[in-house]
Length: 247
Length: 297
Image 1 (cartoon, chains in turn red, green):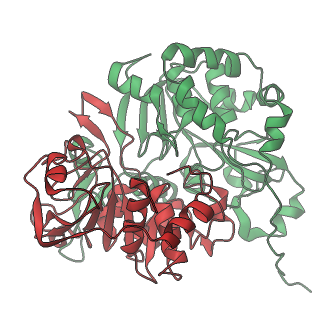
Image 2: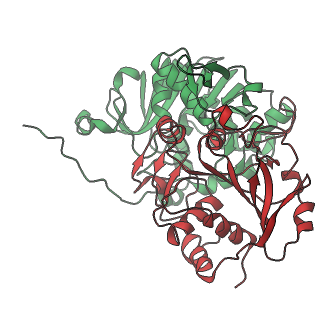
Image 3: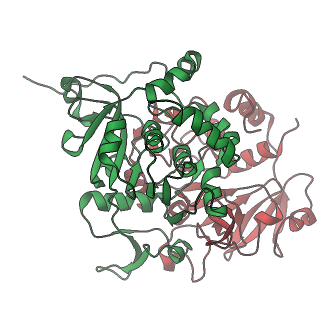
């Protein structure tokens, strides 16, 4: 069955999740990836949203992280202060999803400005909760389209720290980026640097290198990303996103 | 709302229109625009459409925030025009993360001189904001970051219902509404409906803030449109998507303000101006919590 780039990213992201994980979800592809994982291999995945809803089970696509569908039927709802302190900072969240305008070779993410901070070319939304998600979860998953301007060797502004100099632990940071899932490849990290683990079907090493702003490292055994199964595609198209909002 | 805003707010004040995508006080923002306040410092974790409108109307000299966007849609275009091009005027920025902003309110609400967080290490945010400073733990060799208390001159909070004196019930996502109210010097409480005091006292666990902390109580149905009010109405998602077009230029945004803010007297007229079909289409379905037993003799 044919599938779109987004469907492939969604299923690749879903497979990074383990049953029983507590996940800080985002709107869009991460939300769909978590719901997909929950309906396949991870029924006990716990979805937590930045707005403080704990163990949400939305019965329709949330329009924002403050959507009432995330609140209705949740196990609990925390204030922002409670969510960020009791849950995130205290280490109760295993996985967090992040995106950003730029991601660099060490997994640092920029969602603040392109160009100089005081005289920006593009003013982006800013951290939101991204800086504390990147600092406090055990495993950060990054989902983004793979384009050269999004993958500079160093980001213009570090909003959310990746594998920073001196090591994360020395700075009191947990975990770190575990995977970068794009429309071309899945990358992991070795010694704090991004390394290609699998290429999507039909994508060459040159394609990925072309879309990356530094000399990209490839793992010893780069595989082909497993495409979505018919059942995964059925779940996405018929149950999770029947109106095709994110496809 | 008009009299509460005019009594509470002065030019140059700092103002926190609270709400984390849910229960956003749009009607209060529109009233501030209509009364033509200037040089305000607008503060919120998530300055969304209502702050875009305040910026475009020329009310703002500074934005203190952690995420400035159109939630689920994209950029805040008037915010970007002010930052990138100085239109209609330049604005100063003071930028945190969500936890940074919320923790500042908590410090403000509880009288702490600062509050430490395990955020900001390795980020460039401390380089551009002198209010984010490293501090050593007095009890271990850990270094964490501290942020100062935040005490807005005026906070507007929204809740679903309150009694006449201002004891307020909120359900669904509470965001930072409680901290923002307790940290502020003056509090305006805006609710969907005023109910009898016995309703509030039947379920005190649901109370967001008490009357002691409230200076003005405003009953104003639909005052969070186009955002959500759990159990009352859903987000008008079309309005958020349309905003991307409306705000594309300063001129098209100003036309919108002329029609929907300056062109109406108050929220009631705004609601009448929205078509009945549109208002009805946003109605929330029914999904009741089970009553609890508080006991008694």
